[in-house]
Image (cartoon, rainbow, N blue to C red):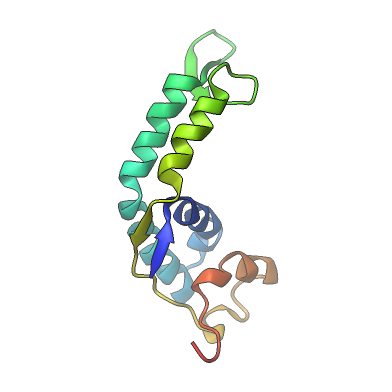
Length: 125
């Protein structure tokens, strides 16, 4: 199936709570996470470079730089959004392992099921 970098990034985030499951759906989530992360590795690297270029340093209580962050208050915020937007809509083919209702009923909460709706098999697909 074809997804954009931005979609894949959101999909990976939605898998995080499901990855803790020691069931078949947890396995399928792990397989999907690996496929997604492999697919968007260059996008993630580019995004991190942009964060370093346009972001500001985040320091701990000792004054050590522990991270970088881009916020609307940053001088280059609009340019960051523009440059990230150029690659966010690039499409990639990623093979997604689907989950069935039997995989998730009694295993995941309704909230978790809704979060991974994109990987659920629905009747008639």
